[in-house]
Amino acid sequence: MTVERWTDAMLDRTAQYLESTAQSLAESKRSQAESDRILTETSRELAEADRILTETNLGLAETNRGLAETKKIVESNASAIEANSNAMVEFRLEMTDLRRDSNHMIGIIMQQQSEIRGMQAENRRILDILLNQRQADEPQN
Image (cartoon, rainbow, N blue to C red; front, side, top):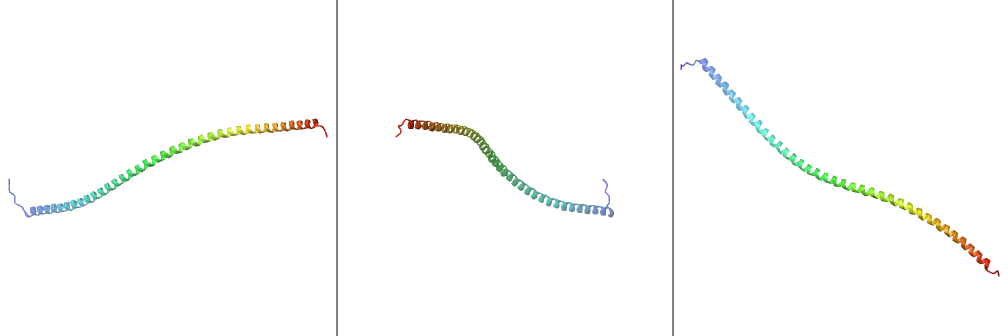
């Protein structure tokens, strides 16, 4: 190993190098501090985002429960509407049958009324004949 004497130029270059390195280290420290600050802020923002996501998930769960209840109500209402519709169809069919039967009964009643009127007319005619015969058989005073 040889020993070399340091010259002023070499010392100046080393000093400049050390000064440059110190400035780089200071800049690195400032960058590190800024990175730490950004990291801390990012961590806070992530925590807030996590809180918001948790609240959103809770809200979605509540919404899903509400939707499930609404679906049950809709299905129940649909069943009730279907039952009512079926009852209305049955009622209409019964009413149609009742109208047809009523019309038939009205026809029978009208026919019987016509026959009764005919029998009444026949009875009056017979009564008139009998009254006329009676008057003819009675002696005249």
